[in-house]
Image 1 (cartoon, rainbow, N blue to C red):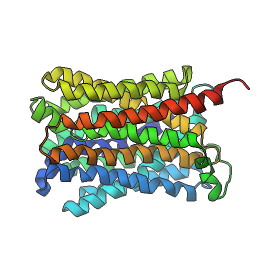
Image 2 (image 1 turned 180 degrees about the vertical axis):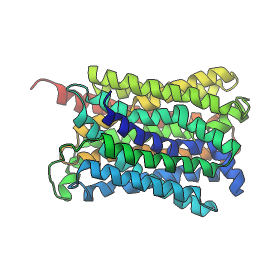
Image 3 (image 1 turned 60 degrees about the vertical axis):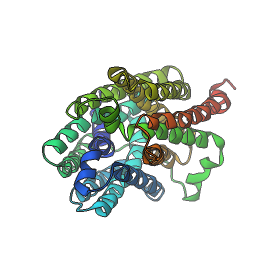
Image 4 (image 1 turned 45 degrees about the horizontal axis):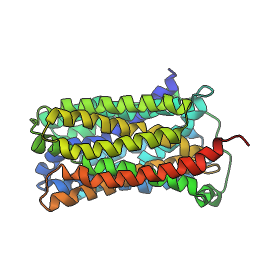
Amino acid sequence: MKKSLIALGFGTLGLGIAEFVMMAILPYVARDLDIDIPTAGHFISAYAMGVFCGAPGLTFVRRYPLKNILLGLAAFMFVGNLFAALSANYTMLLIGRFISGLPHGAYFGVASIVAEKLADHGKGSQAVSIMVAGMTIANLFGVPLGTSICTLMSWRVTFILVAVISIGVFYYIHKWVPQVEGLPRSNYRSQFRFLRHPAPWLIIFSTMLGNGAVFCWYSYVNPYLTARCGFSSDVVPFLMVLAGFGMVAGNLVSGRLSDRFTPGRVALVMQVVICVALLSLFFSFHSPWLSVLIMCICTFGLFAVSSPLQVSIIHFSKGGELLGAACIQMAFNLGNAIGAAVGGIPLRHGLGYEYTALIAMPVALAGAVCMAIFVLKHEKAANSPR
């Protein structure tokens, strides 16, 4: 495995911990700041909105070397997470989470293109999946570690850990990632030209709806496992490790399958899997370990769609590749923001945490429909002999 891809993956590791650890430590943050859990869910949404607002900035830096952009984003990761760690109240942490999210989409956008350029012939999807693997490893080891640190010390120390990781990201990108061929020069307006076509929008909406559906439920996974399934809070870090295994497996499997078949077809199948898993989670909470198994299937699907969608948008955003790749992360995190908010609706009406999965299922189905249209009308036509 190339060191350069490992360095890129180290960056997604830090971003993954920053993004996902909030779901695991939500009750601790809520208690420390004296707010309820649905209100604490705003910290998830704030990070997602930071991603949404930060990614378009890539249109202004396209002319710079891709490696230099990555180094700047790594420095921004450090500043954002340090601010979050030092936040003294709800408003400051909300701002800190927003700042922490600003480099997320931009990093994925640039790193996806760099990974494809560094990949061996015919293995572009696998290279992107290795880059994305950092985020799955974050869920496998980083989030449980952050949760344990939160339990033993403070949630603030968890964000200090991410800030320290950001320093390592800067170092390894500087040392291991070579300068690669830059993108063709284009003016500001031409970078948005790909959005005139329906194919990118179908990919974006499929991403937003599919990811948003999962986060309707996953944003409240901790109280779902404890309050509804009956697990002790001490067991939750171990269960998060199992969920992380599902993410790692889904990401690696989809990367190989996407090079063998097509990214769109793989993403479509996995989104159907997510639909079934979410519906099953609503009925399965009476059987705790069955719920854990289905949780792992759901997280498998969540990251099995990640690299296929990332590769698909690059192929269908010629002239605006950086913006296109960043748009997927914007869609992922806009879905996170909407999902966390929508998932809180049944909770505010006094319903159980299992209803977050029920309300998510039709959202996931809508995402699968968008991907089906993309595969049948656009991907199939693009890959057919001319």
